[in-house]
Length: 168
Image (cartoon, rainbow, N blue to C red):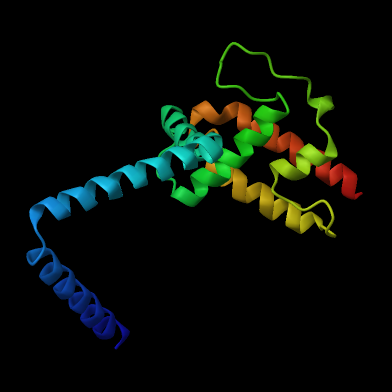
């Protein structure tokens, strides 16, 4: 029923807009269209100036993940993997450069381990919660699925071990 109502409203608005355009001179239309485009470009420039770093980082990272040959992921899985990679890159534990050495496994902190597993450090967490989070991430990045994610898988394994040691 709602679809019918929305369709009728959309068609009614479209009819009145087309009638208004048909009765307006082409000079007025082009003048208003130029103003609208100019205003839209100014708004886009302000938006990119203020939030460009954040808006452009996710698409570029998703494109770079395509180079890692991650196939069959949904957009939500890619965003989760993006958050994992950003956490690891911020801590200096991951780079797309294959020649970079990985830090020693003893340097991972408890906070980093919780971030990697997407767990809240303030909540009471059980071993079952840790195992579920670990399995959820490993389903995305296990080396059997994509051999290029071996380093990520090792880091997630290490994070699981650190969190489990902290629980005991």
